[in-house]
Length: 464
Image (cartoon, rainbow, N blue to C red; front, side, top):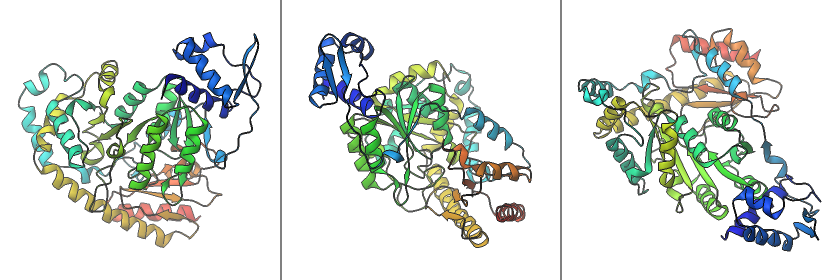
């Protein structure tokens, strides 16, 4: 795509999104050149291209103006522009409220620590700690431990994604990987695309970086709505998408390979980057690990982010981003924020992953999570009225419960806290006031006497 075509497409998105109104004067050629960084000739060609399409018109000595063109699109009402995100304070209050050890942690984002505990990993960590040079040396600067990056690259290769260790940057968890990737790809005021319902860290990052968010709804059957995505990227100058397509948090669906292939083609066609949040990639319930978007990425439009914290515990807050050509830029950003990742833990993980310990641990973890999620589903489905809808997806450890329309999930969460029961209200995951009737339940705890009592209290409260 020529530079003038690229600029014309970006300006077309702004016009069709209503950024400029009909008959509003566009920036002059020189102003547009200064803003975009393109030459005057490139801007002139772009304006002439838009004029040929009937999107703008010119007036002698006055400049270019937006033409009055009716915009029709069947999906227009489903795509939402969120220009100002305000969620950080809500998330902070929520996380503080569920920290009390007496609260039943149905609202926790992390699996039960007892499931994640690996005696072999702790033994490896103890052995590594005996060698003072492993943790008293200079901090392990970005991109991180080379042996660990080699092992992560091997795991990509096992899925048919040829990867060089230099493409990998070790981060302080999955959220750090997402934030660094967004910082590398965006500037304040840029448009990004999110799923309408998504992990609250994505909304927090958008608020922190001053980004404008276009959100698209989930597809009731397939999880990801391709038509709504097409509509959004046609109407708005989307720079980056941040999506969760495997074991989606909080809903739970995994998008099919066919849809992922379509998405990869659209990213390439419209030259849009994708940051893929795939921290639950290892927590599938079947026999075959779902493919990541990186598998379908032939033109390096995808940055893949993942973490060990959901499989080995919050204490092992080691993540990574498959950054490709953005690796060096992300390393520079990392030096200005987290600087480095704990070298002792990196060394221990590299040793642990180099044997078969991790695969054995994952196999047992998946089996247990599958059993527990089914038990919770059956228990809740049996005791809750039909007006409460629970979908069971074969991955992860969350259940996403649709409440009757008249129930406010945030009020439910606050009331349950008074009974020392934590749940995650839908208000954490989307920015629409009308959609407050969902709660997320963490199902990774064995249903012993205490958990059963808490479940019965939860059920009784919802009924009442």
